[in-house]
Amino acid sequence: MNQVLKGFLAASVIALGLAGPLTVARTAGAQAAYEAVDQPTDEQLQRYAAAVRKVSAVAAEYQPKLEAAQDEPAKQAVRVEADQKMVDQVEAGGMSVAEYNGISRAVRENPELRQKVERLVGK
Image (cartoon, rainbow, N blue to C red; front, side):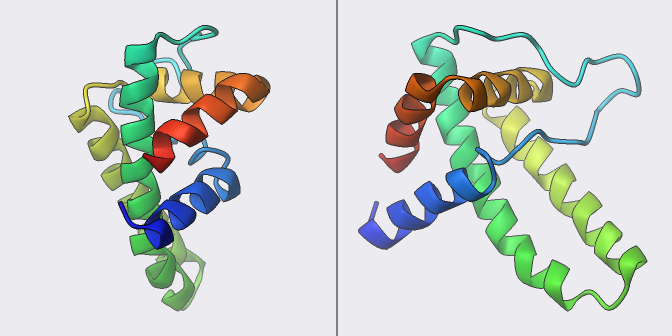
C-alpha cells in the first residue's frame, strides 16, 4: 500500500473515530447495536482493520456525493445509501455490525488497542 493511501486511511480512522458505529440494522430490533467486545482477539482485530479500510473507502467515495446534495432529504438519502454499503462491506468480511460497533467502542476506550488497530489499518 502506498504512503499516500496509508496516510489517508490513518487520517480516516482518526477522523471517523475508526469509522464510528454503523447505524443500519439488518433486522429491526433483533440485533443489538453493539456486541460487548472488551478484549478482541487478534483474529477479530484483523477482520476489524480490514473492515475499517473498506468502510473508510466507502466514506471517501460518498463524501463528495454528500457535499453535492442540495437539501436535507437528498443528504439523508446519500447517508442511507453509504451506510448500507458500509454494512455490506463489514458483513462481507465475516463480521456482524454489532461486533464491528463493539470493537469500535473498545478501541475508542482503550488507547493501546487503538494504536494496535491503527498499525493494522496502515498495513
